[in-house]
Image 1 (tube, rainbow, N blue to C red):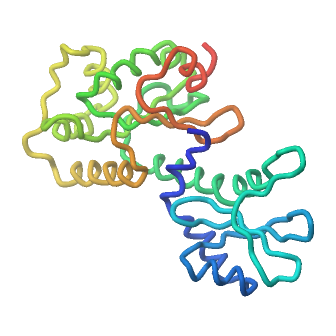
Image 2: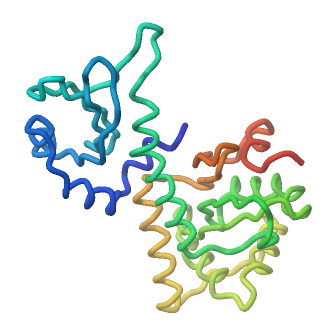
Length: 253
């Protein structure tokens, strides 16, 4: 899903919205704002138009104010060659800041480190201890992790089975969570990881926060993998990736 446009629009751009509200927008733009759109900023547009980037109904939206300032057109603008002139402004003003916010939220979630903390590439994944595809991705990533090229950060959740929350809690509460995760994943179906019957309040709060983040991103399955592409753009992979996609996520061997 390029640029995570479906996911990223679910998280608010608090700072951008605050700055936008401080602007004195032209009357037609104010009318769009009154209908529920958040006006993020404006950008240059051809043919005497003035472009405005907005967020509306969980999507980025381009607005174009006519030269006389009396009317506004909503939608994408194309040139004679068929190039979409709305893509770049929306990417810069709406989607790129949202991507940074998503990455920051994952960075501050409760995750278990898998690999060298100084590895040049970091990959996040929402992971359930009972998820066979999470284990498959763990196996796929071993060459990169062992070579010190990639650090996986497992954001632990519990959604697959009744004992999934207890197992995630057991990993997070372990004296050495990294080793506990390593032992669990390496054992595969033979894992002896036992779910905690009583989850400590502190650990439960971490799991709840991880689940809340997963819900905000409208994720319904694991693994949900997040990574930065070669241009620094945030990308997502749902499920264990194909060999070709694996290289995009983890980089060359």
